[in-house]
Image (cartoon, rainbow, N blue to C red; front, side):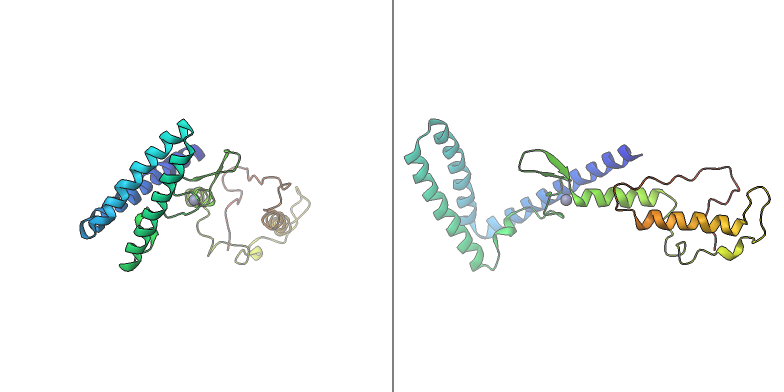
Length: 202
Ligand SMILES: [Zn+2]
């Protein structure tokens, strides 16, 4: 199930990125129609970027410096034009939902390894949570759990009453939740046949 959830989320992320990029294209098209000089600047900037890469390969420092000066000038002009029409430079960037991973779901670390982004982790949790039967937490929680419905009569076989037995289980579950962030905490598994009251009771 975990893999299924991850692959469907990654597809969603891909769609999200695509939407953000298409949206940017539309914004650019509209803006360039109204302010053609911006389109020219954009065009020049991409040409200069290619030239700079070429000159870097040739290690042509003087030309690179000259190109950098032009680039800076153009960037400044672009910024001024945007400011004059009350837009900031983020207007010409895709609007991703998550600014930490740009909707890729992963963050590239300084050593070029990748870490799953908090947004993707949260979405996996949300999906797993909805697929489990624990999405009713506002009604079914520790506060509303009713021990009184369990008998106080001691069961000969167990040597304790069902209520004491349930109280013990309740305390163990509570302890598990309280220590959830502790990496040394072991998992909790409920097993047993149908009718053994593994469900929630109020
Ligand atoms: Zn993210």
